[in-house]
Image 1 (cartoon, rainbow, N blue to C red):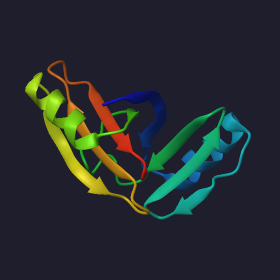
Image 2 (image 1 turned 135 degrees about the vertical axis):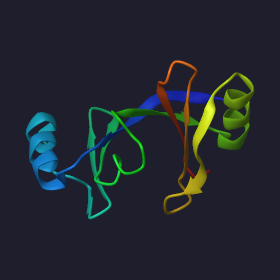
Image 3 (image 1 turned 90 degrees about the vertical axis):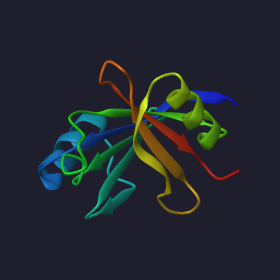
Length: 116
């Protein structure tokens, strides 16, 4: 099981249009994805996402997503180490898998596996 590090961070937002304007100004790029359920930017080797449903899903702040080669194995290892599953593995489109956990201190950790 390998990781290529944190390459994606998702922010829960209440007003997607305002957040889109703010992050467009910050990153100086337009979104590559702009849907009612997700707005995504690519800048400086990072994926920055805005999730308008994040607060309803229990997100209280940004979630860093670690890119991994075996999401199910890494998720199991985190649970064994004391993490609580917040979102089990799910396909979010085109074979991209995500999951998230909360560590014993309440920090959110995301996992992301791109199709091979």
